[in-house]
Length: 173
Image (cartoon, rainbow, N blue to C red):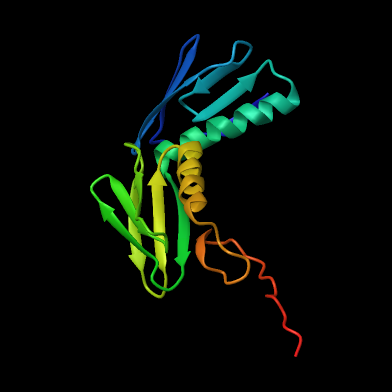
């Protein structure tokens, strides 16, 4: 038996096929595995996982923990845009990128994702929401528009990503 501590603000409802988790940032409904047995104790605020092998328990534990954290605190991914003349504009539900191509690139923002732009020395895109998988997918899609170049370092990269720089072509003189 493995347990998961649940914050007091979180409400959990378990049915035969679904688990519903409600919190300050919304609610998430997840289809439950057939063999998975869950027990939620409201008094001690613990969610117990029963009748699974040890590896599957930890797998389900991580998924449930992400659902609870998503509706309680939310998730955030930061992207940096590095390059002279590279710009991003945020319109109601779309991002417009100027990344050195002949045309502007337009990315439509999904409904349950919030995006904020900050610019001090370099442009930072904050992707916020309560679904861990969807936030990381949006970040990967945005990064794929112009990945960081290993020669000049220009492009879109994750906030904590280190781009290993390569040496350019040498001339014989």
